[in-house]
Image 1 (cartoon, rainbow, N blue to C red):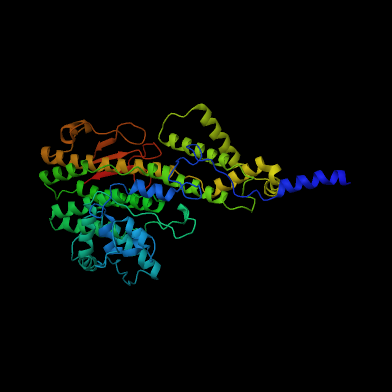
Image 2: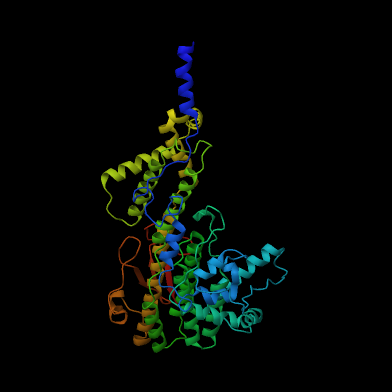
Amino acid sequence: MLILGAPIAAFLVWNYWPAGEGHITIGYDTTRITGPVRPDGTVDYIAYLNNKLGHGVTPENNAAIPLLKIWGSALLGSAEYSPRQVELLGLKSVPSDRVALNEFPVPRTPETSGPVDREFASKQLLDSLCEKPWSAPEHPEVVAWLNGNAEGLRTLAEAAARPRFFIPFFSRQASPSLMECNVPAVPGLIVPRLLGARAMLRLSEGDIASAQADVLTLHRLARLYGQCPDLVVQMLAIGVENHALKTSTALATSSRLNKGQMTSFLAALANLPPMPDPLAALEEYERFVYLDCVGHLAQRPGRGLDGSTDWDYLLRQYNLFWDVLIARYRKADISAKKLQAAREMSEWLGQPEERFVAFVAKWGGRAARGLRTKWTTRATFRIITPVLSTYSESGLRMAQNLTLAQVAAALSIYRMQHNAYPKSLDDLTSILGGPVPPDSFGGKALIYRVTDSGCILYSVGPNGKDDGGDSAKTDDLAVTFP
């Protein structure tokens, strides 16, 4: 018995003795970046992103500085900001000269039965006022709201005139990770509703220059927000740009602008810088969130997550999967080997997990290292899976809607010149300074028809099918005249 017992005891000690911290090899295929490195030997993703995103940013060119006057330290992601975070902005403290930007007061009406209904009705009202001219006597309560926020709107315009938007990532944890960082708390859609509604009010009053200025402020703010790679801020940037495009289309199809004003507006739209690519931000930031999370798991012995897991394998698989997804959405070339490996991984992740396999992976010790590694890979993939299709489609949709607004402005100019709409979009070449860009969805020509009351211009939208330009019931993206 002793002869048999000694080897078994030795095996059990070897198999179940705590393996300590997991090891991760720093390199492109595992950690993706090689520095900066913390004193504990792990990659400091927070410092890397702050150095990269903050390069060349000063208090004079950073749009976040004026916005701090409106939202204070909440913009930094926490009511209790860190002096180090403010220092990274080039400031000594958060600006004390605050500017108010108040939400629209939700009115009580007989048609709304509760606070949720009233708030929804108010948002619907404001959204509708961003898409068509309206007058002060029609909505005096909205005029009072706009006037009460006049100083805040001037501060927004000041911020929009700056070229950069940077708020440093910061964590108070002893072992900071990206997942635990304070992220910029940029408020929601109050900004596009304020600027969009005022633009349409100014349009109805004949103040075309101010209406255009409000719309362009919105477009510029969307592009500034898009410089922040955080998922929530990226979604906000998309929302602000979509609001701006609706108001821009209302201006571009309005008969209230003369030829010179419409030409000026078309030129301003054409000179806007492109929206930051949401895929580019997510490709790096969201990838780093996962890689950093795995690095922290590897540093915490016990719970089956320790040196008995092949963390390098896990990171390589995730980077491979991410690379293939990005290449696919960018329609870039993918090697057959990478594509096959990603396909096999996707099929494996979709398979149901057997309880026995999970049990062995968790309690099998070093002898189950391979199984444990795959089990850990599956578990972490399901917790943090890159979702890119939404952002790929959003980028195409925004670019397409901007093109539609520009072509709509050109159609308005042509109508003023010839007292009729063109028979073909080819007739707009001289106004646009080149041919009309193709449809972002499918690459074919935009669809254009002259109707009895005007004309219709549309893209087939994400589904790639011509649904007649009915944007209310289908995903076609349409502009109609009048």
